[in-house]
Image (cartoon, rainbow, N blue to C red; front, side, top):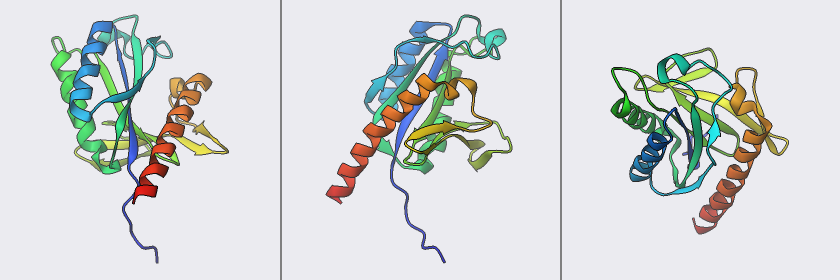
Length: 179
């Protein structure tokens, strides 16, 4: 029989993309107000691996990835996704999103994204939110899975998440020493 125990805290990350760079900047400030200081943000990049959002949001789309200093409990991902959905609604114009915010987390073993869409590899959490297993960590690197979004499979993005995991693991070791 396994003995249940609380999981380690995890590193909160998020992707933000929009056709309006200013909306991304303002949303990043809102995220810091909700979840504490960011410890990293990516340079602006073109979100061009899919045109799925172009009809609703416009084109071109710009993206930033961010991570937060404070670690979170994995189960708080539902509340975080619901709160980021509220930010998305605030910026909507006549029902069309002007920004997309996809929070998730890095743990020692995986990268999880929160989504409101069900699919075979997604596990229901609560509140209409699912956990999307996006990357797994093995042989010293994150690895994409057959369903991983193309942009998250990009070697440069994976290297970024590997570096963020390194920062997270260092902090986790410090926390474990203190406890």
